[in-house]
Length: 456
Ligand code: TAP
Image 1 (tube, rainbow, N blue to C red):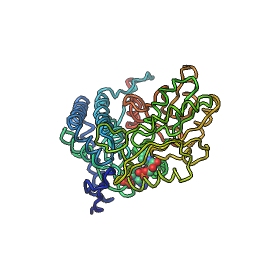
Image 2: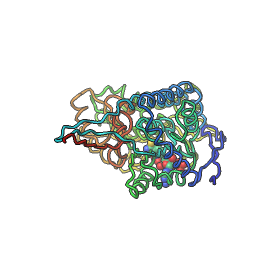
Image 3: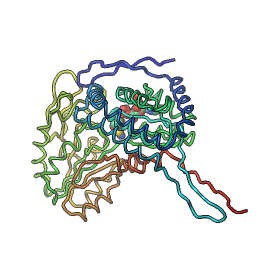
Image 4: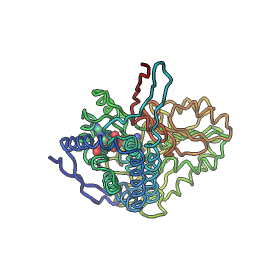
């Protein structure tokens, strides 16, 4: 029996854009059973044919790129430029992993008395639980390598942002993926997501979202020793040394934290500036922040859209109380929509919740540091460890700092964290396991060792 329906809200207008089914635990079980039934035939598809199906799926996403992008503008308030990139990322990730079925190679290991070979076996049914901040890319990062390795996928989008996932599921079927191999089940995390975690027929959970829910998922997976990949929060440091190209570092800092309205686990929400250039950096940062265009995400010139929901707006606003030390602020539209102006808090104490918590909104904190050691100490003084940036012209310092910061994805003289061909994931409480790049396939296969005696 269905658990009812959910209204999907456009966060720029507060209008209902669609009403979507909320699946029940029983319906989730049915999807898992269908996936399990589809598995034997899917893993038996010849590698070149599985590769061809994934390429067709990628091409179908490309053919529908505009449609998908505009759905995301309406559902998540993403700027149209970002939404196009996100749909393109799904296409690229599918293309990248379409090369995998024919390259999923084991090893032949010399042994006495016979031949020893290893196989990369699929895990089975994989549950992919997706958050609302990047509905398309995060769906793609889970489903593409899972399918390439011969698994069946049940994908649960966030309740607030299901529209692109539902469309991707339709495109997969149109591209020829067999029924049951990729299913999109919409509904609540506490119902559909929890059922995927609890179901003994699901071999692995890929979860992206809050650290708090991630902890519960890890504990739930332990009941069945279920495999789990977690991509959780971040409180990432953007470290600017005195010898950096300050103009470049300051010009890049706003998009490093305010992109997607700061709703990004890789947002550089702690800017650490060497004390000797702190004032100069702030002078350069101010115009870069105040000129950000916040508004209608469908306008090609817009750089930042709204927050996802009224509830999330309340959470973000709680980090900027009336007595907050606001150094400067951008602007945001009035009227309907969950708008929040880009906000720079400085100077803050390193104990300020805006400095320690994942705000997940367009709020950045700035603090000064004395030297390299001090910068690394402040950067690492967090339970998180997802990403970070280092701005310096000294290559030795760049590498020393990159090695010393406890995070999975560091960038030097750049704030870019994500490339589909390189591994992505967190240290400490930012997660477990790696997505993307060559590493992800390991997370969707088990190594099987087979020994064949050849002696009489
Ligand atoms: P979460 O509650 O963690 O939601 C993420 C996903 O998990 C959603 O699909 C959610 O479904 C599902 N879920 C929730 N409870 C579940 C359960 N018990 N079992 C299985 N799945 C479950 O995140 P949120 O509430 O949307 O956001 C809260 C905070 O998390 C944000 O403010 C931000 O700090 C952080 N966050 C981080 C990230 C990344 S990328 N690290 C992404 C989103 C949010 P429903 O949405 O349908 O409930």
